[in-house]
Image (cartoon, rainbow, N blue to C red; front, side):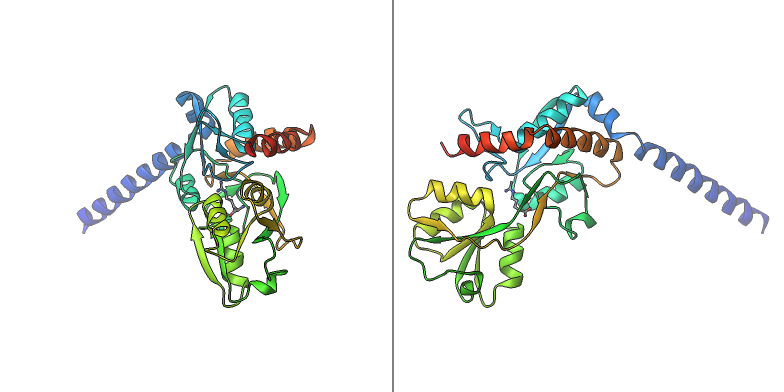
Amino acid sequence: MKTLYKGLALALAVILFASFFGCAASKTPTLDKIKKAGKLVMLTNAAFPPFEYLGDDNNVAGVDADIAAAIAAELGVKLEIIDMDFDGIIMAVQSGKGDLGVAGMTATEERAKSVDFSVDYVSTTQMIIVPQGSPIKTAEDLSGKNVGVQLGTTGDLFATDYIEGAEISRFKTGSDAGIALANGQIDAIVIDAMPADQIVAANAGLVLLDEPLTEEQYAIAIKKGNDDLKEVVNKVLEKLLKDGTVDALIEKHMAAAAN
Ligand code: ARG
């Protein structure tokens, strides 16, 4: 009996010891890790102009890249950008593949179960793109039609949840959807307003309907618990919002991406 108690006491001690140091290790502030690595890693999907697109030099350019560069500068580290599928970004932030998901990403309640979000930095809506002369004039007219979206986006969610009897074509990028619409393979696209403008500008014969479909806000995704990083991200975003930089970046990249 005595040895059993001893054994139990020892096991308890081991568990307490391990959990104490386990917690201590996971509490190493994220900022220290980033500064030690000398780089801030941004995860994005560079097919979403003006927020992210491949520039002339094939590097990722856009509003989000510039915002992330300002955050890296604030931390005194360089910025590394990983271009990946949009629908993998949340998981990659969770697993620590990168520090920030900056991807014109709408802060939704569902996503907030998996990651933390910064303050909002853009207010926008989903829009409908159709070919000129299309019989589709409102969201109701999308019923039973073939609607193109970017896989895993809020446009995908809207089309899936709210359009009755629609066939949803899920594309890797909005521009692939734009080409399919211009070629008559689908009837309409549901996508964020500013990328929608870019798709219309890039493809002759496409037009935007006036009706906004949703109200959504973009925010930066951060691994849950990385509060020290979130604090810096919010500080930089608040400054860039207040001094007009975010608006100026949108204007600049709307023009640049359209070229
Ligand atoms: N705002 C939409 C969403 O969060 C679309 C974002 C797509 N972003 C991108 N970089 N492809 O679902």
